Length: 369
Image (cartoon, rainbow, N blue to C red):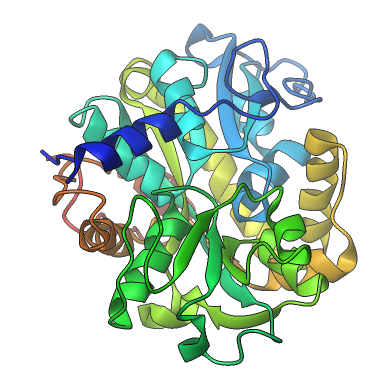
């Protein structure tokens, strides 16, 4: 099983896992969606397995569009019958993993690096990845007055959301590919990697504290609206321009106890994704409407439109790219080689896809044996 390469990096990642959210709910982890559990239940609907509710977590950003739209349009509730869909909104992956492990949520939409860290930290006992949700939506945006080419990134201050998060690992890997050196923990080296919460990154850019940022949407488009320039779209670094940015995970305990409920949520996810891809403009508006409910503010068109275009909504977890992202974390010096065998269980997703007449998805050899 993996071991953190240095004790100091291990302490840094442990601190990340303990970071509280900016807004705490009664559960102590995420802010409750203002309309959580209030989607209309069809007359005569019955509870699945007699379960009163299922607790679903996601982030308030566009790379979690499936969860945003599925909540706002009631797709999950439709499939769950009288079992209520309840929602909790998170700002950080480590906090969502903590909530999953504690039972504060049952199912969650989350990025690949927290999924890897959560799985390996528990020695493969706490979660499973049961589906995909999105690809793309990550960009390197820079101050065009200071950085005019990729070579100009050397010596500059580039923000990422957190030490060891998905975008942090991607930037560290890209830096290594340029032949440059950076200490993973401190962020010091040929590039200064500045860990900055996405909520404050636009202000840090405006006041000159950073020269650019490797960030997900909609933060990337917020920086562009503030005068930044997209220097690199991370999708261009991946085969077929696809890489996992959002997974669906479930507590192993919940999956074992309530597979029919998990299958219902996956049905809702597949139906949501089908609707999003068939109705992109309506789906964009729906996601923005849910963002307003969850956070109190919607995105302006000059941020929403370009951000939405850069994200692909899909069911495939793109398992081979998760394995590559784990390798990137190893190369960055954050992890020893992790054992990811069994991190996926795509059985229920493929059952749902077969019923819909769609092709099955692959676990890249990392599924439950």
